[in-house]
Image (cartoon, rainbow, N blue to C red):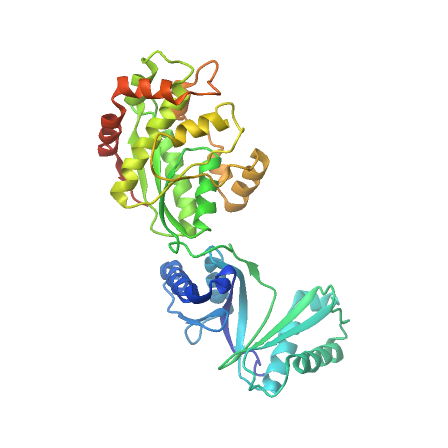
Amino acid sequence: MTMSALGEPCVLLKLGEIVLKGKNRELFERRLISNIRDALQPLDLKVDVRKRHGVIAIFLPQGATAEQADVVAQRVADVPGLVWIHRAWRVAKDPDTVLKAGLELVGESEEAKRGARFAVRSRRRDKRFPLRSNELDRLVGGAINDEYGLPVDLSNPELTVFIEVDRDEVFVFTGGIPGQGGLPVGSSGRALVLMSGGIDSPVAAYRMMRRGLHVDFLHFSGIPFTTSESIYKAYALVRKLDRFQGRSRLWVVPFGKAQQSIRTSGQDRLAVIAQRRLMLKTAEEVAHRIHAGALITGDALGQVSSQTLANITAQDNAVDMPILRPLVGWDKTEIMAEARRIGTLEISELPDEDCCTLLAPKRAETRAKIEDLKLIEKRLDAEELCVQLADSIQEYTL
């Protein structure tokens, strides 16, 4: 039986915009490595995460299988801050060993069996290695061509063999899994998402996770005038999104009685905007209590009749805290495509009794005046009401 030239299975992670952070880069890398370790903790597999120049390597325990490395690669593919995840082989830092590993890796590939065009791409991070990158390309590429008769195509290869010479070893791999990109969760602070059961707010939450925010979730339920279906949906959505950040928290506000008070205020066309302002005021109160620095909503300009520039301005006026709207320039098709990609669309499309339906007027106001809204809030004693609502929240742990 011939001994394999492929050494130990490992996972090689490529960083994105973190490498452009200059003097702050180390802070981002530390946060990213911490997030990677947290993501892998449930796998119950003792791994060694090491930072290298421009890459992060995950070494598995001795005797680990390629299948276990695949599981690790799939899990870290959900961690924002990474652009590529490669299931690689760690081989000895010797040209002959690298050559044999490259040949074996190609020989096991499906592409080689169908005569695919190939290329070899080498990168020599350790300049002490005796062969330059182009020399290593020619050595391994020539051997592959001789052994398997595959045609070389440097412009548009169907199979690419990557060889990366590092400080202590050489990584050999083909292909990879696209990462989430963006920044490590937690590197930009903490924010609170106003989480409906719809399509938009989960996508907004994900987009802000990618910008380095760790987010908590606040859901407004129509209880006692609706069922708990919307809470179940919100919980399912938060669980789906939790794989991108971990330690997510869902808070639920029983909002039905407050909505009833708004309805009896007599301002039918302003009811939706008045409700939205009360939600934002309540969310701001909760955000202060959990030390979040901003609110996040799924608003998209012009998507529904109430999401006009005048109404968005009226909503901003309700609070002092920044309101982040990452989807403001997106259309519904774009939002649905992103929801489908991150796995939240199917949940969002489930039927439920949303609290917003309780106040849906026949015709919504498109140019709400702040003065009129403040009069409604004065009658409701909105400042006191939002504190009472914040006091009534319940936390749902994942």
